[in-house]
Image (tube, rainbow, N blue to C red):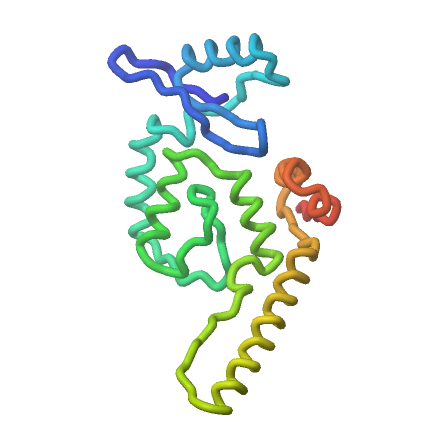
Length: 204
C-alpha cells in the first residue's frame, strides 16, 4: 500500500493502485484508511498485507495536481509517431501511433490504477500475433464460373489464415525485461507458466 496524510476537509481515498496478477494488488490512499485495510485483510486471511515504502499515494486522485503539471510538460514536448507497439498501462491496449491521446494516456497513469495483469496478457497475445492476425474478407460480386473460382480462392485463403492463427496460438512468445530485478518475470509466472520459462532478463 502507498499513502498520504489525510487533511481534515479531504474525502478519504483508498483504492487499488496496481493490478499486479490474480489475487495480487497494491492499494493507495490515506494512511488511516490503509491501516484499517491492512487489519481487515489480515483478519480475512490475506497471505500478505503490508505497507510499502513509497513517497506518495500514486495512481489515485490524490495525484491530480501532479497530473496537471505532467500534462503541461508533455504538451510542450515533441512526441514522435510510434514505430513499435507500446502498451498503455492505463488501458492495457496499444497506444495510438500519434496524436494528443498519447499525452492524455501518459498523464492519466498518475491518477488511475496500473493494469499490470491485463497489460502483460496483452503483451503475450501481441507476441503471438493476436492483433492483426486475421485477414480482411473482401466480398465482391461476380457471375458464373468466375464467381465459383473466387469463392474457392477465398475459402483457401480463410483456411490458410485459420491455420496460421492456430499455429500462432501454440507458440510460446519470448518476453524480455530490461533493467535490474525481475519483478515483471515474477508477475508473468502467475499468468502463464510456459511464457515464464522462456522469459529473459537483461540487467545493466
